[in-house]
Image (cartoon, rainbow, N blue to C red; front, side, top):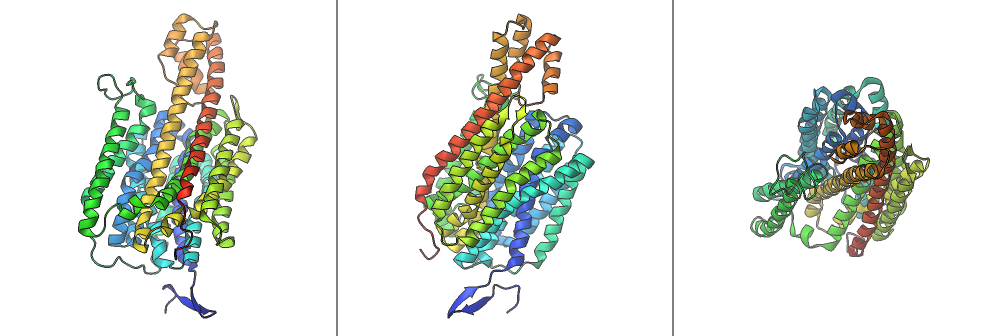
Length: 540
């Protein structure tokens, strides 16, 4: 028996599977690359604004494209993996991700950066991430080793936050182009390392790809995610001036989201027929009908709700309001990531018999506390030292959830469905992240715009003409200098600019605090799903 095969050893009369280290290291590095790539987008806000003229809306869209594309295609990526093989699926994803990073490095404007680079990276992630989770059940058969391997992948998400520290220093010294180029080289190196992984099992028999389900999933998820992502720009009900069109004055954003939901309802009905006919489907019955799977998917997504809040609320505030450099912002991500790494890796290793439900419940509660701490760290001028405590506590809570999220899903289904579940888990992560960014971004935009308009209307120091101009414009999270430049162009005098800046700073802080409060409520609401976690061991 070769080292590349899952070997067994005799221990006390029973066979115990040997835990293979090299495969899980390759998978961890790949997972780190995807998380670091998204985190790097957070610390690139200032560079993209300065070098490509990006607005906050542009940055929000660029952040949204990865979870938008990946979320729409990842379910298909999970099914494709069981048909063509997980290693091949992984390698194609790595090459697409590398190409996307290289396009980002040479992008002449935000259009190419967003719709070229970010789309390619999203497509790469849609194959890469399901493969990480799909490979594990094919290599690690014992429940203990499988739980540890899943914990390693969760730990990699935390450890990945060390990379933005290095990439932040690189961005400060060499610019965003060199930084994204380095990420491209990183994915290429992992591609080469993947050839040293052991052979994985193929699905028994010839499986038919669910083309109809794939098309419906991509269309439905894209419409839904893109619709909610545009609410903050196109309007919630009444179409804004930025909307490309309107239907009787109604914003197209909610219409697209509702259309996406309708398509997804059709998808679930179609999948029942497809699975009965072909023996497999894009979304197997076990995913649709098993409550524990739904609880596990919610946990997978909740990790990215908090991560999405950090991306859209904290990182821009640190850079644009507090004036933090990319290096210091990267250090903040390390402070968040290291506790996540320690607890995601340590819990399955040191407490293998602990209740998955209890661990997930603790994770939800602790992460909600972190959101509240970060709420109180926000001030009109920037952040207080509480931000470091919030990041540490958030990392601990995310580590608890990461330790068991994927394992909770795998425990509830058979091995083939457990391998295929990687695509659904990854989709849940991206859907939750996209929804978090969209909802929190909308709270920021509407809260700041309405707050500035009402504050200006109540001020005796601002002329009626300036009040009218201010009320007609929209505002989002930006620096003091950018805000002053905007109201100056609108014709505000120097005294009016100072008054408006004071109103804006207070409103900006309040809207950010409100968004953090919403984040905490969402995380606590997710606790209700943990009652469905009832299977603690694979034998059950």
